Length: 549
Image (cartoon, rainbow, N blue to C red; front, side, top):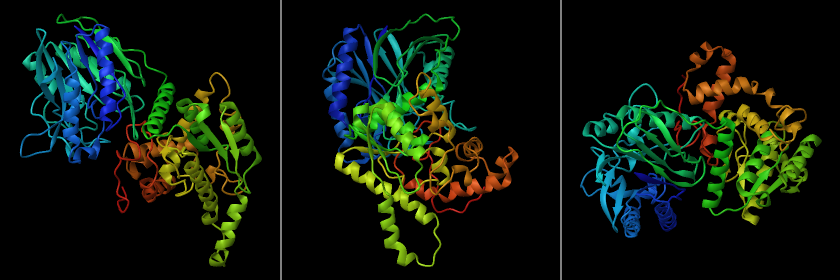
């Protein structure tokens, strides 16, 4: 069977735009010889629609759009991810579904069985689960249809299985010739290999081919990498579609004879190349889907803003990025020079707006009220907040998206200023630890110098005061990042971290900072997720809480 995979980039809620994209892919794949066309999960409305599903007309509008798409189908069927209303009087109001469209109408529906409610997922809030996966009889074959989580029953995070039954095992028992999975599986570093192994194992265990069609694109903080897969019985990889790009391709599926070949996983991308491609896609889609074509970056001369500027150029083009240097009275000359050199290397517009006088005016205005109090972090933060005011003014005036430059290490411990350097519309590198920022910048410079070498090699500093460096108040970043990985991502207790060899005083100090700064993270710009556990919707720690573990 020749199956066309429509690995497309839907926009959440853009029903007419998504229909145009789906119809174009359907027609192109038919022209290429497809006998059946498959799309990603919720391709009609985009994933995740979240509380749009609670709007009074949304589900009806998606159903109407699906019917409109189905009306265009010919004798070549289309299996498309969509939403359908729950006709029952109990349960959630909708199903996450796949519509089998053929000869101008929806012929059959398959409903998602397993609804994820961990990390960034909250599908049980919106959808009613199906009792069993659907089997579609077509062209003399029995096709088992699953939707995303349905094939992850035995791959739940942690030690405890989250689901009571396995839809794939049920399909195997019923006897099918082919399993198709419509997916919108968010990416994080390393997930591609996990996902590929899952699909190959399913093909081995069931003895039938497995077709996995995944979405691509950035929707809010989530990045979808595509990499749709087709595996033959026995676990042989037949095809892998492009990473981080739309790709429509027809794949010949061997039916029904099984293969005895050993698994042959595809060669993985360089992990840093993967991260770079993901961030570029996430930034580009966040900007374009929000109506922005241009971006602003405050260039401090430091490594974080340098990386964000490079990513902005890769995503939007040098002609659409403006770098702004905002030196204060204590800004070093090397920082100003590094910012200018970076802008020249990237070929972007570069502006300098000195803030010393503005900061001095603010200090003078506050002087009478602050009389008798020694200068402290308040005055240091005036610099960052002055920069925030200016950058937001530029964003308003030029209609450009302001990109914040904080990394995960800084955001974790609150080494950032509310209404200052945290100002902006997207936190591009908020899920990269500082050590990853350095590694990615060195990778970017693998062929020529783009990030100035001095920016990479000098001690990191926020230049809060003359001679200040980050390590005045933080452990070395390799130690800090390892500790944060344990506390934030692995959920280890303080005692468990100490048992791993971290100094007790450092553990107590850093964990306290992480806990105290939850309020800042709740007010931060959305960030692009690249790890299994990012700050944001996937991590829901109360702001006001007293647990010390």
